[in-house]
Image (tube, rainbow, N blue to C red; front, side, top):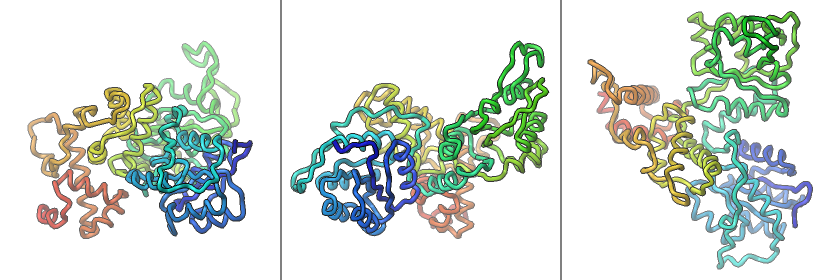
Length: 486
């Protein structure tokens, strides 16, 4: 047995954010961790220290894992090495298994799968013999036990530029006590980001209370947030502790904050300014040590201009903001989240559905996802239920709203005026596509039809831009697009 109370793991990855996320997760599970962002630095650490396991990304800035592995074996023979590969690296994974790595893990990275693989590697006796590369190494994935339960709130690690920017912002603001405003469409994952801020803060072991302000009635919102004393109003038969008091010492997350009644906003202002509150009908101030994170699917500054949100409260909250792009603008992340939801659903249904047929990626990346992550989760859950155990999810398991949306059909701005006499069945979907096409076209015009610059301006990757152009106009040719516009 190689395991002891504190095993040492070396993480090698040129993505600093991924290194940091993995390191924090493993430290939380009682491992000692060192990080290396280059192969050269990894070899220096291996020369100077003893490690129990190496977790290495295949592609590094100065070398790849195939070049690094022999040097790792030379310095510390028998150390188990786990390789991280991308979606399209199946051939690479087979090659690495032949070179004697313990196992490989495909992206997107699921924390519980990583932990399970590490534990199994550390439980086996080290093999200090030289690996015969002519014979494939034992494929541990086939013998792996069922994974530990996967939580919907488990962090999902990805590599898209949009994801990295969001997580960099989370890492930046989490250690502070700043109030944070999270903007994003309904279902885009605002609460997940709020929970990540909490997990990475000094309040990680304190309460996290989420409140959907859109569900609070005008009459009871004060009582829900601040609590009430017995007899404070008709029906107040007992004392009630409010959400702020429950979250004291930790974090409160106020979702859809723009829905709060104006008079409750005034009470909230005092809490933010003085960190004190009173229960409804109470006379005693209660001190609060609390972090406030709010979220909105509307522009709060615009709400201020419309006199629907207090300006003083807005400025108190607006210490730091994070914008979550809608899922349709995050093409690289779609399959990462789909796989994550599939892991959760597999556990829930007791199934072992390995993944998605290749055609699903194209369908998912060109669909508009009006319900964002919430819609994607429901689609995956439904598809997993309809798919026989052990089989890949195919097109036949998807709802008709996705498979019959005809992504190849062009949806141009003029489509908004094709049915002036009424609303047809597809008008909402057409309106969504039309608005998205108009935004993309405007971005292309701003950068003189440079695809790379347009993708950067839209905060999406080039592949997603190509897919959307193909879906909207049936081509990725910018010359043809110019001709259409002229």
